Image 1 (spheres, rainbow, N blue to C red):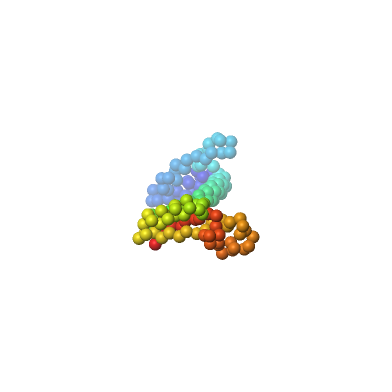
Image 2: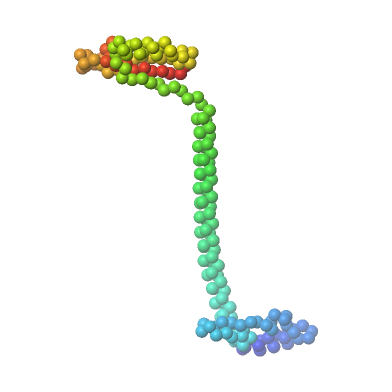
Length: 177
């Protein structure tokens, strides 16, 4: 039965006191067929309308599912990106704190400042001059031997470090007090 006839029947059965149905039941629009031709919905058979309705429902459901999957996938990507941004912000804050701590901490003088000073009169004179002009209120100075003399090699004297007398060179350590 065509939809036009069903509307006429419904006017008789369920119409208002003048026998009319709601106005939108009279202007149902058209349906596009598979061959791209258009057909008025009121000229369609009831079975055809129901099949078209079911087909449109399944198409909409698929579109909704695909759209929902894309939406969920994008949401997951956004959440991962937000987590990475949060992690990077925390890392940035940690690095800033460490940088501030380093900038406020005092820089200590290097531990060993001079090396390969010959252990002879010139080297000893140099070390004595360093001692003389060192700012002793802030720094301390240590002189240690470096490189064992050739005639003492192989005796095991360097296991704990040799004395200045047994060394060919000197090394000077300057440390902050």
